Length: 140
Image (tube, rainbow, N blue to C red; front, side, top):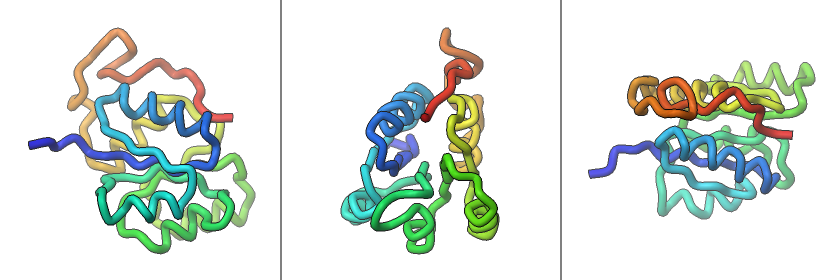
């Protein structure tokens, strides 16, 4: 039986997807990455995510558009903290919100809150407290 939550990372920037994938997997989670909301929706019938780490501003379907279709905890990430974006995030009841650039600890804390995972679930290691990597920034 495998009870490790799957974290879905939906972001249109490949370098951000790779960084987030490393952060999430280093914390003991399984992860799937997607370059677009449509790519994630194609995967959805075959997989189940405990949480989405989701870019707000993407072409075609935005993070908000995807959020409106799902019943899964979402951690929004954005480099655009304008008033309209912040207001919509607040109304969305998202599990979390990260502004780029963000650090690894913030990402993992937001995911832990979203999936209801205690920090003690992960073994301590040389990369930081309770398996959390150091506070290196992630994202452009």
